[in-house]
Image (cartoon, rainbow, N blue to C red; front, top):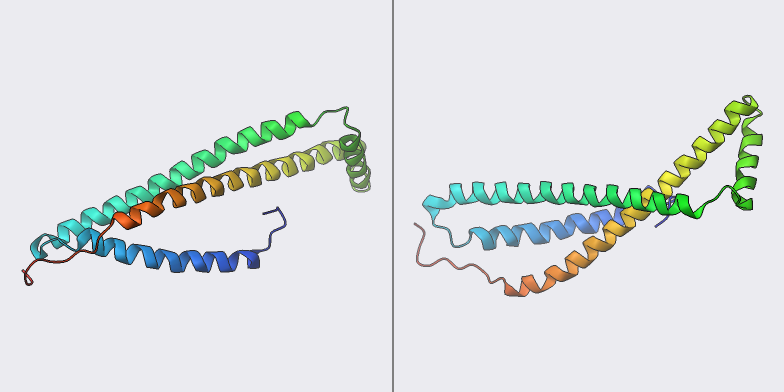
Length: 161
């Protein structure tokens, strides 16, 4: 994954994810509600949907927290790896400042060059934080695989009630 990833590169993974969700949630709701009696079905379905929505919201909040904390960590690491004595950094800033001086004055062009550089630093740190989050999600997904084998199909006892 890079900062230059195109939107079309993400279409197939998003489609696979959408198909996967359909393959997860239908059997999961069948397993969760399969042994519930008919007179209790409305309440059980409401509780199931409430817990599913709360779990999704909590998962999104945790993912955002992880992303933001890792963004701060990666930005700190990236900024510490750069120093004002770095020849490559000084050359790039000088080139950018020189280009911007064609449109503005020397002070403004220097400030804009630093601003552009800071945005690139932030974008790279954000990308790294998303990669970290994707790794955590992958590990969590692999750890959930054994749970699938613990689930059994729900079978109702007797006729409809």
